[in-house]
Image (cartoon, rainbow, N blue to C red; front, side, top):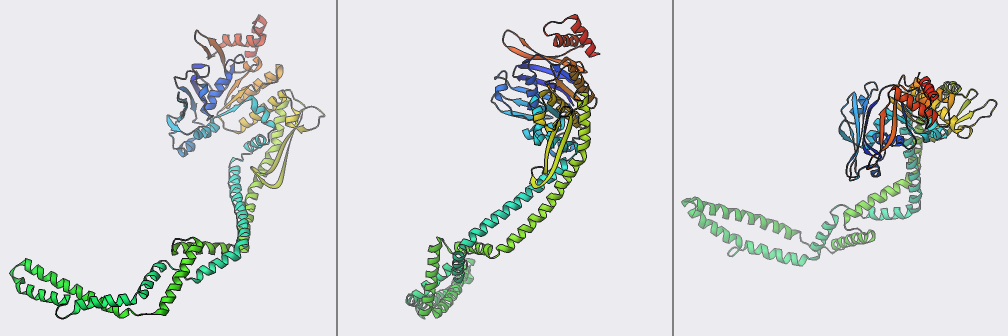
Length: 550
């Protein structure tokens, strides 16, 4: 329930702060006094888009804050899910800064606008004049029926299943397209794949072949230089190893004199061991060096094959060729396994169709079950509102196509007069009749839901006299179980409110301001008399006003 509303620096409002009570509250005021401004401010609290142009003084920030009593509405899980502190008396604040930036807060914690929008659906329903026209809209009609049928969780389940179903359908179409394209390119891709696979490519293969080619192509130079190097190491008199061994002998004789000389001796010994190993490996290498024209030709052919494949496929190395092989294998596989892949996804689609079909049937059954009682309740309320012969018919037909909220097609029909034929509600009802039907719908919804607050913006359009009085009684009755706020021009409705506010414009030396005041009983009499008699407040108008209040 909305317990207080503060608006600062918004449109024609400089600073207002009002406290609100449970029950039925009335707001009146002349056309253009600022009632729509107040609704606009409330809309910002519920997540509407901020407009910098609505700031009154562009040098200051605009602040709109509402306080809500939420202890009876089981919103703890919402606050936990949004990572917010739960308080039984919670506040929502919206700020528009001079820079044009908008900020939102729940219990002083900064939040995204989407959080306000989600929370708002649990707190307030604002019925605008435009919403009455939506009675003829299929989405609105579905929303009413589904709210009464308590289909919220089933619809969420259906929407998830529908999303998964569409993903499968899209995948099926993509696979068919891929396979169609792959079939056209199959022969060419298979040829390329076979050509690459016959090359028996492996990672690092090119480098190994290039190294082997250099060895086989330079046998004479390798033999000559390895032999010379080994000879220089092995010569008995002047070879490097013999010279080092002589040095070792000299150092062995003085090693005992100090650690330094001992170190010299150990290091020369290490050098001799290393050269011995090196000489042995060089000898082995020399033994392996052998002219082999046939192997040279084979290696050269493999290299040329790889070079040609790299050029053909615009590949930098063998690793890229291996990636191309993998890609071609996948393309060829798509074509070769086309039938089984399509069969598999078709089976998944069929299974999902069965799943979503069951959920759609549940939606249809739930809707079908509540429609008769809804029609009966609506017709009774319309009878009380001066439409004794009004008959409502709701056609619910289940098709085969999966739509946004099931497989149902829904249409509301109205026969407003005795003996009249049913027509689509948007064509059959006048403005006043639409207002009465909307009030009937809202009153039924209010009894079904646990919504704390509902605000009606001129729900009384097109009605007057006794009908207006009946509307006031219904709004008053709704106010027993929830907070009802009605903006009205009709004294018959205004007289039913437990609390009455008046919005008016006031000029000062600088600018025009919108203000709002709570009316006491005598002030309410004067306001109702003004609404009854225009600019003149006669004694009879005052008497009539007192009668309305009583």
